[in-house]
Image 1: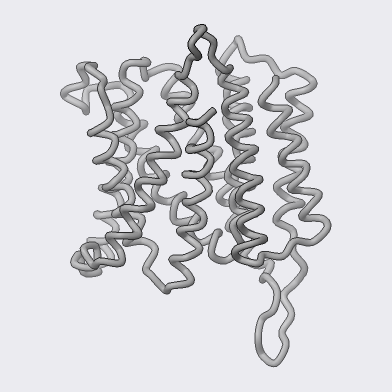
Image 2: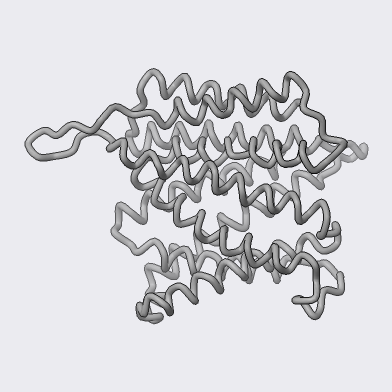
Length: 300
């Protein structure tokens, strides 16, 4: 349970960091690049796998690692923008509810995964939760100042929902058909590395100075974000692999369910207390439905 707590705290910290980056007017993309470099280094240091994967490009999972790595950094940029513009709570819900897309893919590609009535109910509730939680009234202006969220930014959580669902689906497919258990830690490191390389190439194409990456503020926030990013995955895997003294372990569905419920709940509380985010009654309905949906999907 301790590992799950650390995973939840690490995941929630990611959204909080993005919010502070916007508040302090720090260029998010530079921090994201440092984040993935940090996560790659941590992955290399903490990976004990002895699997023979060299030459890397010869592995069947390598093309998937390129695509997923590119999508990682794209989605992280979307998470950053959505956290800053739409809010932490809505961004978190859109991210976590995207789990229904890989579940649907799993039902299609895995003959052992059956669509039960309960699972179908969870999927329907999850879709409703996303739309209800992101709904906002049109922005109004008072004395030339925008006082409410601009609904034109709704596309951010929707893109996040679809994009993260696509990423998780490719990860699911790669793990099921191409990535053995002993290769999984290295595969994860390669994903982070590909995201970092994509970021560096994008920065070069933009012709923005690389010296920005070593500015103190970018380094500190990037390293902090990278630790949280890798920690959220590392502690989740530790929770999945944990066995008690009597040899018992939690089911993966329960671990993922508790993790997602915890991240959503904590993110909503942080949004309310720290950043004074406001929710409509319909948003609260969406938040409650998201918690119910995660619970249903975790027990099916």
